[in-house]
Length: 334
Image (tube, rainbow, N blue to C red; front, side):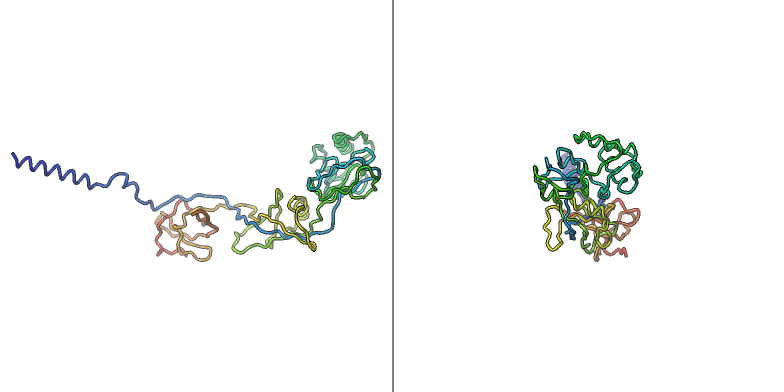
């Protein structure tokens, strides 16, 4: 009887010991995982660079007619906006207007030309739509009449649009550098009412080494401009837009040059994969190997950057969805 009890006790102890030696479920699930998923991310390879500027001559908003300057809407550093009343001369409104080329003649019915087309485009941009066919017709005159009335002018247009109601500005909004007109004094046609930042005739960035290949652009404030592979902004409209920014207005020009900060980035962002740095091996220059779970294949990737414990890589066509966290460094990918 005692032998049976002893044997039973021994068997129970052995069962308990075996149970104690079993690995807990929590520990079994805590084993390191070798394959980790990768994340796709859009990357524009943005770099904060200095945009070197070449300044041209001074620019002003000129009085379109002679008379007594009865009001002037100007504050240094504040934008002059297309479609706004910039001044009154002899009590008649003068509207600031941005057109493709400066207005240089009265636009009588039947007048044709590129200046007419630019005027029509400006009317449409301000909410007074008209076809930009480059010819002054009744619809162009009516659109101009509505613009004048919205600005408080009582002038009635019949045979065309007079030049002396508009003061040309080079962009939709241009910061004033100085207010030149003196209210209550006579002003001559062509006299400066407002000084603008000097004209911008060139803008260049120095592309850094190791940048991702592709078409590039620069961003200054709210303005984006294309740049060529040498980092040069060649588009005249883009230069004019940069010259209308507060960043350009506040730049210090010395001997005709200045520089301002600009974001230099890809025009079309590319897709990169986010992988753990430990997944990379055989790193040479800007290339490395990773291993993918499928047949533990080694894949060559381009390393485009890293931050906060993450590496960004470009993969071959098709990419992959996961990588091995502990790759076999003996497997070659090149």
